Image (cartoon, rainbow, N blue to C red; front, side, top):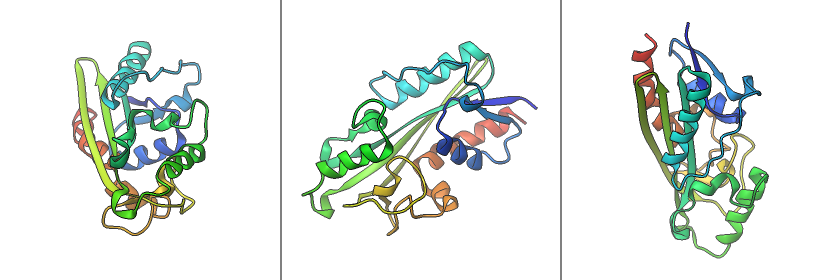
Length: 197
């Protein structure tokens, strides 16, 4: 069975992606399993640029199929910020909590009707002669305070459209059905099922 390398060291992301890609005939590993590989500096101006850069640079090093993504939270009232800077919104080497606390502070006097946001995920798959891109979105609203113990990142402050619980309160199976990452990776899964058949 061929190996598929997920270009991330984020254990929460690895768990979600592996669950979504269940059924793909590949031995799925991540950069957590390969600590000797370098960190790729995500300095692109867009999510697409970052996802492509990660996939291309890791593929060049390992010469095996690579799947990468970049994800951002885009808040309409803030002009689509934090966007590509979501992971380091409060600065370098900060916690998830630091990032969403900064976001909540910036929205502290904004009414519910103006707290609309969307998560956007761009996924990239690269193998010899193949470069495939998929994008997923999930619209919702930002809470006034964090809720829930699950998920990671901004999950405790994001309520997806059609629900009254945050991503951090919803079961993982539900999140993996409706999320931005689910949308992008379920599209990508069709290509992967064919590629690894």
